Image (cartoon, rainbow, N blue to C red; front, side, top):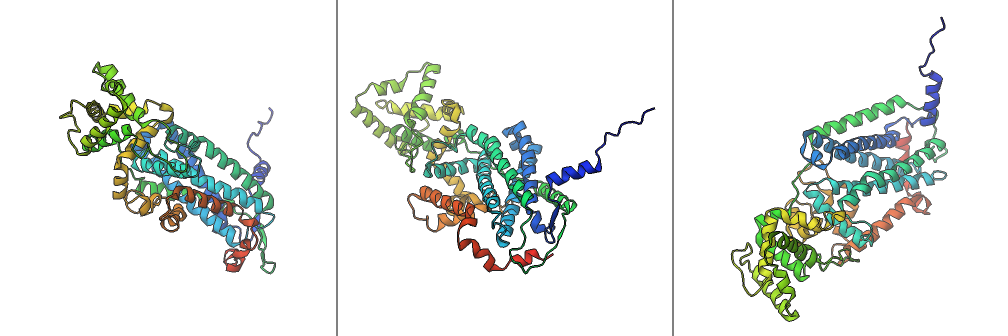
Length: 468
């Protein structure tokens, strides 16, 4: 009888695969924790990818309300915190040891570009979370993109667009950059000391130690997700505003109709909100109501009036609702057709029909219309101020509840800019975007900048890192 064929992997094959995938030999200091940080960053990315895929599969309602969904959302959040912690430390180690010197300059450029892409990825992720923090963050992000002249291409208020960027586009970019980054590290090996008088020997890389460290980090992330779950404050809705403060709802509708709201007058370097607030927030939803209810169309009567009378009606209705008179429809002025129109829309909002009608006008950019309306009411700013997450309170670095999770602390440079050179800048979004763009370029091209690229050598930190 013939001997059964051995189909198991041969030790030589396993070693060959390992040699293809891993760095096999490192300097005597290469097995220290300092040189595991890049791998730990990849561990975080693997956790982010796995938890993100699960969240995409089950959807926002699951990750906001289900016990398991909240757990996965928390794992995702803490993996982000861990990723930026280890990757920033990884970059500092490379800086301190001048590991960016030739022939490793391109390795730094690719890694730095991937890091900047990860910053954008994190912010887009925060905008997708689905709570109040998301609403407020995306409005601030929209100002940033508009100030940088990119608002026509990236609409932070368009959930579908941001979802695609966060789930597909940037992950693909980061994955491609990191593959190139690692290939260059694999080919050239770990950077040797730039000082010829520093002794070292070459030794086998301890992959077991590497994976143990990765496992410990993964366990810490899971533990933190259980003990300190991702915070959640329910998102604000137009229905809530109309129910709790109908006067504000009516005043905002009048401002949208008169073209005096923040959205109608928005000019932040560019003007991405080119739609008519009168049509979007008043004429279209009211037209839908009139068509389905069979009620007389008061806006048709308004449109038939001479221009002077139209303006008089606008002024009269603005003053009427500005004084808080009858904003819930308890009384009307018979001579002004706008008053019953606004009262009808307030009632429509209180029933929950208004917001869906507004966002349904252009589903491709949902929820741009409703978020801009909420911003115009001033309610979001007031709530953000109470939660201490406004720009004046170091904004996007904070979370809604207490200290843990710590929030986007890696945005500290943006906070410093907001509180110093941009504190009284009327074009803060534009100038902030320009300043951050310059800083990002300097960061990426750091190895090529004369004199500046010699600074790490003057700090004499490398010797501590190189010690076996």
